[in-house]
Image (cartoon, rainbow over all chains, first blue to last red):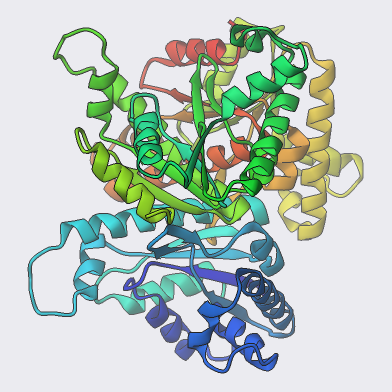
Length: 191
Length: 191
Length: 191
């Protein structure tokens, strides 16, 4: 019943891979979106009515919600017979730099067996993110994505040392989502 | 009143950027040189008279001074209304390898909100370090600078996980110090 | 009497360098193979008769053996007058991703003064690993080795922050083992 942190930059195809895995192995896989657990707990306590109100909460309250979500996810994973995939973030890009999604105290509550990095070619990710039909490459965006992926990788290594979890790196190539999902399944022991 | 660790290899322009920021926002910025605090405390206690004597102190005494400097910096930051920029080191290049400037216990005392990496092109840094007028590139030195910057970046990621601080990366391009200072100001919330 | 962790991917020449160093400085160097200590303790307690039985032990027992090996290595290093080189792993490549060889609790028991990374060109390592006489390059293997070395480097940085140890990087170029051993000796203070 391992907890498996799943990390990847926006546009890398993280959710799709998890959904494919869940469809293939419905009884063995549970997908948990970390942020949703925080919203649920905040709602239960009447702190917010809508998700949008979360960011207005004082930092201390947010930190407390973050810890309680981690604790709930870990406890739920104990009663689930398969693998709990936690959809979360290594670093989140903000106007004030890269915010660490998983500080030490949260990691130790989640007690993961795996940290999975979903990675892809920065050029492919950049073109997926582009909404318009221009075919021009955005080299600056590609550099940012490259940096973001590098920081996530470094973060995963720190998680491994702090919690003893394995690091799994899945390369999600354009149009090969089935292959990526299969490789992930094999690595985390559901296939 | 956040503590903001500022890290960069020698010759990257770290001090200059901090000075420009201090000149722009004199009331909002305080620059603290970590090593100076250690010397001050050692002097107050009669352990040394000159900075040069610091390295002769037993390792235990040096470690103790390092902790007390961290504690003093953090306490002073609480009474300062702006951002305290701590001029410090990720790794220090020594004849015995890279020495970590900020081990866990010091980080947790400093309790930073930001770790700022000042980075630049290794070729530019190497040429700034060269004292003579030769225009020949020193590729070995450039490789060393590239490695040093990479290790500092990895260190910053570890700090983020251990303390919850954001990671800000400022690219200090040759002759664009004003731009770098502006970007830093925006990221740490003083502009 | 420092503990010095020595890390490198299979085929990098780690054991050879340590043996050369031991031959040069027999009284100043002691080589400790981390895994052997675990087997020894397991044998002493009648848990296994052969090394092959180790992997069949329950995870809890393995973790306990890992801690007791670390504790024994550290205690033995205190009575040894020279440098204890601990032959160990940053990450171990497994079918379930990269397994961290040195989690936090082990690191803190070992209390190292140095983490030494033995690195080499991925192309050279790949060709050393190839058993047949083909001269064709295996680019996929090279990429894997490059990744493995990168993760080990990131791990070493985490160790430095968690334990305060220095990071020493030794480039082991093809056919220059004496040079690598000399450089290592200088860095860890035996030469």
